[in-house]
Image (cartoon, rainbow, N blue to C red; front, side, top):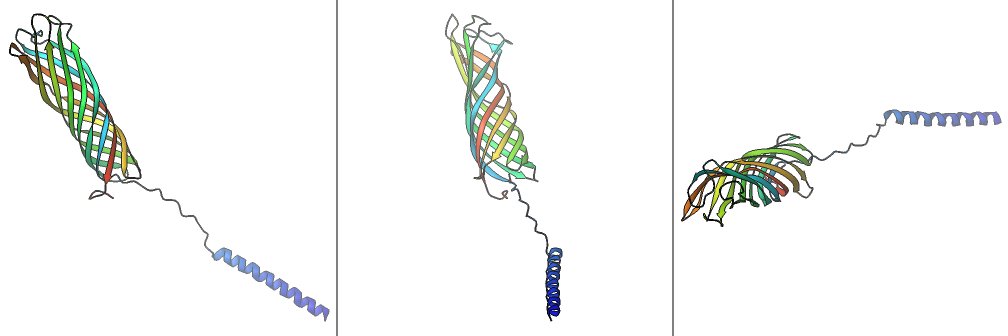
Length: 257
């Protein structure tokens, strides 16, 4: 009897152990392995229209070249000229739209309008009685440009190029010696511009950036003089460089995604 009971106990224990092992093996082969879902990095879209402001500084090279010189106060002979550097502040606003054609490339168009105080002057110590002072001040600068950008998520490096126009106040003064006089002219100069910048989009919808611009403008003929005479000069605010910080806000709209 004891032998029979022992046999039944051994058989029951072995069967239970075997069943547990089989169940474990079955679960291990049938249950799918759990894999963590990879994190998805959000991709910023540069498509949309924006408006903003900019501020910074600029410098230029100013040129005067005499065409016709009439007494009594003009010291330049025809063909004589003078040049000097100008510098100062610039600030204004921008309005534009971008369209991102894939993950990297962004096409855009932008217009800017800015006031400026880029000015300079020089006392002529070369010609005539060496007592004439020449000066100019860039008071406004406008641009319309196309832009091409290369983006990586919320950063974008871009280049730009297009049309530029500037208003410049010119003045010539001779206040000493025998031949005295003064004259001034406000002229609009047209030309072209190129530049480059770096933008960073913030999560709030604002875009901050920094931009360099180069402006080349045409020469204009200004007549400087008073009742005693005429002073006809070709004047050019050439080689204008600007560096500005920018802050823009991008709207959702027909180009937004």
